Image (cartoon, rainbow, N blue to C red; front, side, top):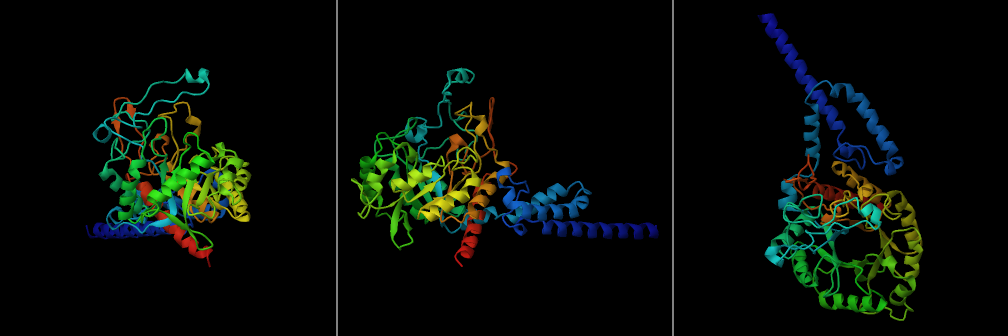
Length: 457
């Protein structure tokens, strides 16, 4: 019996030492030791592989050293997941203490959603299914529109349900989420008074409320000007004047400090390429017939770059910079991560700002059922981290995020929850929590701050 007890004690001691060695091995594998690693341990996407070869080789060698040990116990996967979760910012810190806003992180925000309680009907959640432009292809896909609240025009389902953008509690919840993610600037989708996208209704009357709530949480608001009807140099001049006259004095109105020390409003101009450079030059060059330069309404105007040739048009038009918007890596020249270095170099040599747009993934088959080929899987957060990694490599002055709540295209980082109703099964963020993309944004915001300190040295 004594020999049995002694042998049991020895086995127990060896088991404890074995577990301690495993934990030490896991500690050496934690993501923070691998540069811009991610907390999910998934391989980088192909477009980014060459730039991280050194880090990958280092990680692979560590995996080979510890691989046999890890496979010896059946619960090691659970231990690893818990360790990874521990490396991410705790939820209560994000939700209660909140983060400090990073005014170099801008996020695209949409206030076009409505529901019967606040708007008398559903708006945008009941988005129609858009037909393919080729009738032969269109005939192979369903038609009609979504029927909220169970059936919405999105592949994910919001934690706040089919909300109204007019609901003060929703606006406040959004501001809290953005601040928890250490985002500083809201790029608000904007149409002139009385105008809206084809599936929505005018939202300019919401701007004062959004500004007030943004100010409460120390956030700033800039404007993402949409391609409204008859947008040209003259209408843009009047609309920029309207925005600055009406909202420019609000403490939440965003102004960017330029290299010359001036504080100027900033306007993102969506689909800027549909207007020819000569028209933009009338507004945006000093000698233009409708020039806004050196007037009280001067500002920084950021054009959307889709094709490579657009960079020359943007420069010729008198824009101050370019952004890439789309969250689909490879969809366009501008949204392809491997082109960002050359675009940044072009901007640097022409005194332009380059603002890459990062996104967590892309899926719009709830409204474009034929568009599967442009879907980009989130890979449990890895896709998002890869985009951030690519953005930081080019050392941009500003990073834009697509998006906070463009639910139709599945680019949202807003909280989403699992939902199943009838024949519909929505995607979700499992195995992670609804706020995982807010946590990741906060993580990369801090990385950006630290990296920028090194750039400026």
